[in-house]
Length: 445
Image: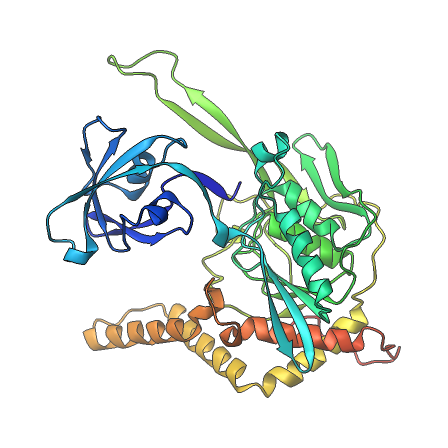
């Protein structure tokens, strides 16, 4: 949540019985030391300079991480099989001083797409992060999504972009406070989300700042993994008519949980009492228009499917999930930047453009093939058939993996570029009056 941790700054993964270094985080102790490399196998971990090395071969990766992480300023020793020796040579002992590591790749970032003569800004928000401790202590440069997005908006405004896309794909949520603050950067002021508890008490979280940092054409790009705080932001933008929502129906995580600590009152067979926690649902989120984001999620204004298997992902796939419900709407004044008539125009233009886009059509064809494989209710016993299907899936994923890759080449992100085309159209029709007798079209396809 704080977009930082205290440890050595290494991403790990499991390969067979080994925990292997997958990536070194720039600026972290492991990166600065130059003692560890990608592919090194960790076979032992020791605390401090004198504690015995514990053999971690065959351990679960979460348990290995618990040993390696620790408070800033403390020492940890790693026994590794160097990648330079193919992981088969003599073991090597590495000692590191733990420090605070900023997860920079999880920070909001900007990019620009040139689309049909328009300059479209993109703000990618991987999560709604907030360094609560830094905020409470009033540290000058603490990690905060709203602060980062506000800075990026200043930069994009200075570059005179014609429109902005907020990319919330894969954003599973985070800080509710930050979601409200980021929403406030795009609306004048007013309610953002309602929270109703088990006894019917409703709390409304509002943007109190009347300043709208960005007033231009806006779109929010979402997919099935956009959840919780992401859905709150997207729903508010949609309810205010402030921007067009593009992508697919979001996850549907509209509940509030609280962790309650548990412990045994007495020891068992001489052991220390076991400690644990239970996660209890205590409230639900509701849109300012009255409907909950639970179960149904946020429906896009313009639908573009992703490679995610919607039949297996989402709150509605859980048999025990709470149902969708409504409460009274909050009082708010829509900005009317996005009207039903504008959605109709945008959708008509999108259908025309996308039908002529060979890359997007190829993408849809691959999704159709993938969907057919997923829906099969039988499996062939012929080895060649199974291998053929497996290879087909691998090739499709390889072709379009950039859709969800943080290091992606923007030109190859078909959904982002299609969204940029929609925003370019929105910039052109922003001041164009709509004929009252315009033909009605469905709001999604």
